[in-house]
Length: 387
Image (tube, rainbow, N blue to C red; front, top):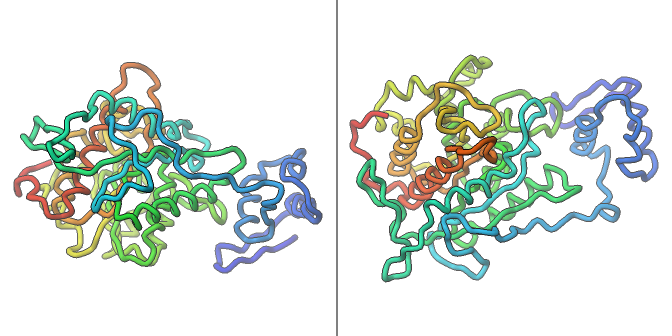
């Protein structure tokens, strides 16, 4: 038997003879494909663990790190102008696509990597070509509430960070994190279009050193267990996020159905409301869960919506929020706290036509961007409006 011990108790492993034999194949410089060619078990979890522990090292001479700068979208979301590094606007809002679903567990369908462009395709029905005399957006009119969203906004599309052959999920996450930090240095706030929900960890990590809260809309708690060291996936990403020192508060909204006993984690730092509990409260009562003075990051998994409105997602759950309910919640939260960043994740390409998922996601993108523009200073919805 061989034991490998890391920095934390959960990093101690007892390895059987087959695993020890696999490790022995890396005694000399050898490519991964040759080393695992005839291994009688799935070696990926072990390989990832050994890389995280530093037992195995990448050879960047043999496998150079690919460039992961954003690639301009073939058609920008809502027919918006494209973002460039020369673009400088105080308070600019930027749409960025994260085209990876490497964090999707194998029992779920892949396809959320195509989410950013699927949303862009649907957004052409809401294309914004009208400008005010100042050159800024005229905004979108919401017939439900008689309000105009994103009027006078500086809004851009920065394209996609696309996955490349040979890149590891951790490398993609680091490239995404670095890109988000770069936008913030240019005084821009980003709406990230996913992609699977594991990418939210990189987005939250990009705010390291700044105390923040996180508002998380999802049908699932995403507090699943880690199967091995370095295992970040769409079902456990918030277990990682809760470990981040600079994350001072997490609110999960819309969780439903029979779940693991994640409610035992409830504390002053972590709170949740189910869909049923949300509907028992006013918008103001939900908004008061947020902490005054703390900036928040907003993360929306499209499966928080009922599958009748958003069927094209890897793990739909019945009896979710309706689109208008979610939009009003986001609007009220944006009128209460300062949103410093956001994401909209787990949208898949349509499985059949016609599909509402992508159009609903496009409308949600407008709502989220509008909440980010409001900066916690908006008048919001009437105080006693119910969801």
